[in-house]
Length: 128
Image 1 (cartoon, helix red, strand yellow):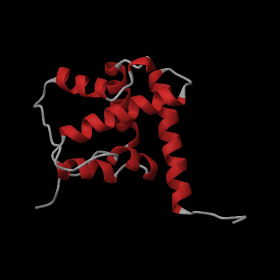
Image 2 (cartoon, one colour):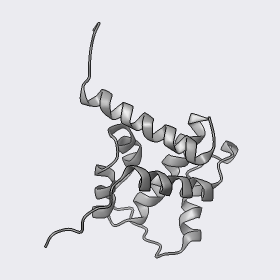
Image 3 (cartoon, helix red, strand yellow):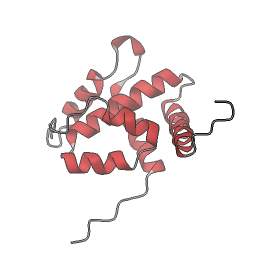
């Protein structure tokens, strides 16, 4: 398979790498694994906080490789909502971060929020 080019797959992986580098910047780390763990845990916490339709809307806007991370183990019926309690959200982020990683869940959530703000344009409200 010499010279194989996957086209859109390559572009999706490259865009995910850009996101991961931005996440490293927001976390102030050179460790890709730390950035990945923080992003993954926060994306899962967001996904599970949203109604399924809203979770899918966010997932559709992520780069291809990150979309796979986002949907990993998602059943679509795991909506937890949890109102607007930040401590509940942070506890969910913490659940997704291995204890020995050194990732602070509050820092992870803030870095992910900054990344999403940087990389995603605001959504227009649905047309009725």
